[in-house]
Length: 187
Image (cartoon, rainbow, N blue to C red):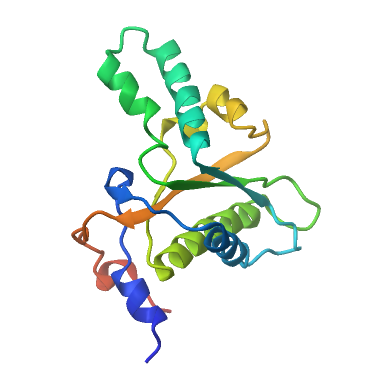
């Protein structure tokens, strides 16, 4: 039997705080990025790129997030600031998919954006196929220019997702999925 279908049927997101080390090896990260990049890409534009955040870079990313948060919330208590600081320290690896969608003479921006979303999903599926668990998030800092600047994300770029990758601490419960009768129409 095809092993991909049961993998897709069982796949579920695991909150980053429930992801543990070890994360993927360097060879596995290379595999994940290679698989993630094999998506529909009308015009072969590669309208996305990767930002790999691992090791100490996770803590530097957290400092940038905490700094922006503290500017907006100067009265926040230390516990709340630490929550913001720890966003990327929870999982052993975070890969950001950065959309570079832009006006093009032939390729609609919407198709480029969807291609970045497909990259995120390929990354999630590939990581799960290697035995890891994932969580695809954006959160507020994906839209905050101060944080994006600190991450080296250009003014015309957008975060399609931060994919947190690690070993699941426990098998998560499944959530209610939509009934096909409610979401399928036929012509």
